Length: 85
Image (cartoon, rainbow, N blue to C red; front, side):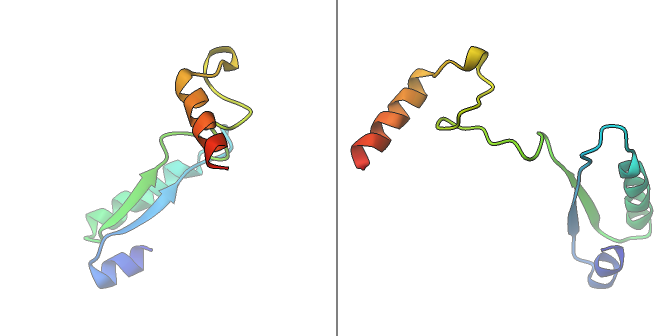
């Protein structure tokens, strides 16, 4: 990615995430990114702001809402969904 960004002079972004809380390879990737940017390559890491692999929505079984209570909005969404079927 560094070579691509350097040769094209176009921004190249990549997803930087870690799924092992004890691992720290992300530090090395940030160091390499800083070196690439310092040499003029427009390389940009993108960091997720929430965990991957979690499905959350109005119609899912698991929900982060307190004690799994359905909200009024989720009830309305389910009602509309039932009406359209």
